[in-house]
Amino acid sequence: MKFVWSDKCLVKQDGNPRQLWVFRHQTKHEKYNPKNIHTTLKYGGIKQMIWACFCRNKLGSIAFIDGSVNSHVYISVFEDKILPFFQALHNDGVT
Image 1 (tube, helix red, strand yellow):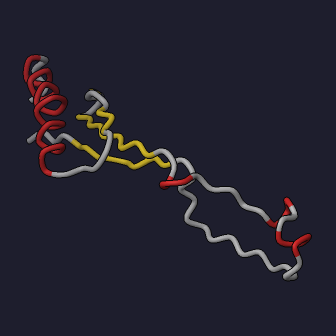
Image 2 (cartoon, one colour):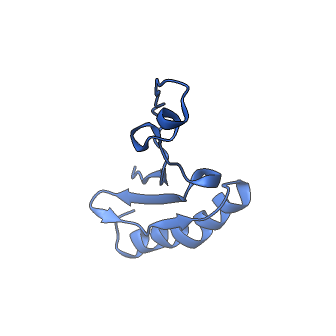
């Protein structure tokens, strides 16, 4: 029996889950001092979902997924990337 392994990963810019605490005096000078300001991106920054698969030493295509992942996206990735990889494995005699 042969196995194909796949996984997905969400890569985010400004996605640091670490919470930053700043302790300062309540003066205007301390409030706006550059050492007390931590910038962030509005709307969560940039996100990119990446999905790939492999079997033995054969690598499948990488799928770059934009937006939300739902059943339609999974089916589309499977049809566009995974099924052709299965076919290529079969043609190469791997499966």
